[in-house]
Each structure stands twice: as structure tokens, then as C-alpha cells.
Image 1 (tube, rainbow, N blue to C red):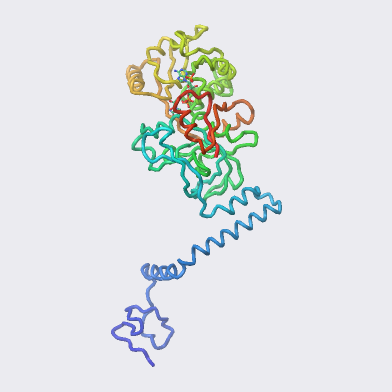
Image 2: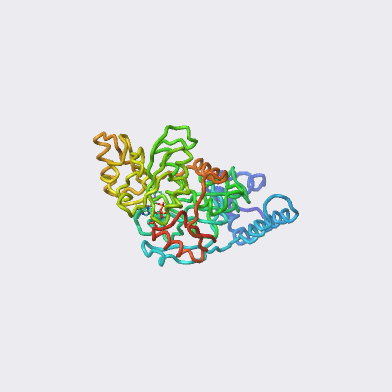
Length: 420
Ligand SMILES: NC(=O)c1ccc[n+]([C@@H]2O[C@H](COP(=O)([O-])OP(=O)(O)OC[C@H]3O[C@@H](n4cnc5c(N)ncnc54)[C@H](OP(=O)(O)O)[C@@H]3O)[C@@H](O)[C@H]2O)c1
């Protein structure tokens, strides 16, 4: 029976611009529906409605088939990646991981909670890392204290920790330089953290290769502390780490800590005369790093920062806190400067005053800006045995609060490491 068409509307579907093909002679008087955005959207929506209950299952099945294929390649000794990695990948879909997080400011070690959360997914230009080690820095617990609120952390709950080493498990779209199975060192963002966990995602731009000679703990120690020491010496003071620059005398305070112990070793690579301060128990340790003169900061000479050999300092890499400008000033050479890595209000006022008065002696506040090329340089120095990460203590992730308390106490010798 012939369908009736009224006033341009199709009696079958009651739509002004009917989708029935005009090739059908019965509807040849009706123009085909224009391919408007709206029409396309309706078609896509129809497809999605039909597929949505199936799509999750389909994707899951395809993913596991693909992963099984990769795993079988590995079992057949195809050097794609390790058998352990392959079987881990097989178990990754929808997997939860152990992590340590806090959900408000304050609380110290007692504020940390052990949780199970989904393994993160690498987005564009990110890599998913199976973590082997994470090192802590004072800034981690300072963010928990709220010194950078409201900027950091970006949201609660927050998994702290930025300095990580491990193995790449998966790469996001656009990642060019890494593949599954690569051993790496990476720095995560302070705002988003993620290091106190079994897995983390890192930007490719702050991830570097880790050679077999560099252990995960040695690599994880490097990002914040190593990069700060590197930036202070090379950028703020202008020291050439290949030793080709001019001779200089520098003082490094808190030379036994994370930043200080790297700073002493890097300065010696640059052929610089190093005076260092530390506690009595660490004097031999700091000498072993290469320091030429070491002061116990609890003695009068140490507190006055006087060089035992009477030298004036061309620069101070100030890694301790609470030393006033008036203590530094008489120990500086004519154009000496203090690079303050923990500048407080007084330091900022001194910085401004010295700038405004065109003083030859300057105080320079430093905020570390991470660069992959510098991290890569540090990893290579460790590989070549020219730089070492001294490990204060290692703690399992299940006891991360002990590591946290150790860092807060402020008496670490070298780096505090957490291992999943
Ligand atoms: N601006 C930036 O971008 C940046 C980057 C990294 C770090 N920082 C800051 O730099 C500071 C140092 O960081 P870190 O990782 O090296 O800390 P850390 O590893 O916790 O430092 C601990 C070490 O400092 C020693 N120490 C403490 N007070 C001292 C003093 N008055 N004189 C000499 N030694 C002293 C301790 O020795 P004893 O046990 O003998 O007391 C201990 O060995 C922190 O405030 C941190 O937040 C800033």
C-alpha cells in the first residue's frame, strides 16, 4: 500500500526531512535529509546506545587477548619485555595498588593512610611506571604542613612523593623515547605527587633512562636534591662541572643532607675548594665525599662559619636554615653570594635590600626548576662512579610513616628511601 505524504512530512516517520532513500520511487518527491551535525549526532548516539553494554566487555576481551599475545611472545623469548612484565600487564586491567596518602593538611607521619586505589592510566606524553624506589624530600612533608596552600597539593586525598625510579610498564599516546621494560628515573609534580605507591605516572619530559649500573634507590635519590645542588652550582654560581672554570672557594652548609651531599661531590667535579658544615658525627663522612675542610656546626667556629684555612667564600650553597646574613657577610669574598635554598622572610628582605643598594655581596634565593637534561647528567655521573647517592635508610612502603618521620626529624645523612 502506498504511504501518504502530508505537507512535506513522511507518514511513516512523521519527520519533515525523512531519512528514507529518495531512490524509492514512492518518496521521490522528498529531498534526502541534509547531513547536519544534529543528524550525525543522532546516528552516533543510536550506535552508542546499542554498543554501550557490549563495548566494555569487547574492549576488555581485546585488551586481554592482546596482552596474552605479548606475554606469549615473551615466553617464546622474543625480547619484547620480561616475562615478569608480561604477566604483570596481564593482571593490570582494573587493578588496584597499595598507596600511602593524606586527606588534609597537617598530621605529620600519623596523617598518612595506607589505601588501595586504582593504578593510574598514562595520558598523552606520560609513562606508567612500576615503582622500585621513591626518595623523600623535606618539601614533601612541608606541603603536608600546608606551607604552599592553597596551591599544593592540588587536591585531597594526596599521594605524596616526587622522586621515583622503576620500570616503564605502559606508555601513553605520543611517548617517543620510552617503551615497556625500560628502567628509568623520573620526577613527578609536587602538585599531584604519586610517589608513595606501587605504580605512578610521570611526564615523559621529566623521565630519563637509568642504566643497569644505577640502582633504583640511587636513581630515586637524584631528582629534587641532585637537581637543586646542580642548579645552585652551575646556574646560580656559574661553576663548570668539568673543571674548566676558574678556581673558587665555596661553603656548603648542611653538607650531610640530601642536597648538601650531592653539592659537595658536584663541586669537587668542578675542581672547587669546598668548606662544609655538618654535625660532629658526619665529619668523616663529609670529608669522604671530597670536602677540603669540614666544620662542626655546633662549635663556635662552625657556628661562625669561619674557614679553618682563613679563606673567604666566593659562594655559599646554603642548605641549612636559620643562619642570619650577619653571619655570612664577614666570610664572603668581595663579590661573594649566598645561594639560599630555603629563603625565609628575612632572607627575602636581605635579597631585596642587596639588590636595591647594588651591593657586591648578594643573597640569591633559589627555587629549583627541574630539567631532564640535568637529571640525565646526574644519572650518568652515578653510572660512571663520579657521584654517589648516599642512602640514610630504606623503608618498605608498608612502613612509609617511619620514612616520613625520619625526614621530618631533619637528621638524615643522605637520602631517605621508600621501596614498594
Ligand atoms: N629551593 C628548592 O628548590 C629546594 C630544593 C630542595 C631542598 N630545599 C630545602 O633545602 C633544605 C635542605 O634539604 P635536604 O633535602 O638537604 O634536607 P635534609 O636531607 O633533611 O637535611 C638533613 C641534614 O641537615 C643537617 N643539618 C641540619 N641543620 C644543620 C645546620 N644548621 N648546619 C649543618 N647541618 C645541618 C643534618 O645534620 P644533623 O643530623 O647533624 O643535624 C642532616 O644531616 C630543606 O629546607 C629543603 O626544604 C629547597
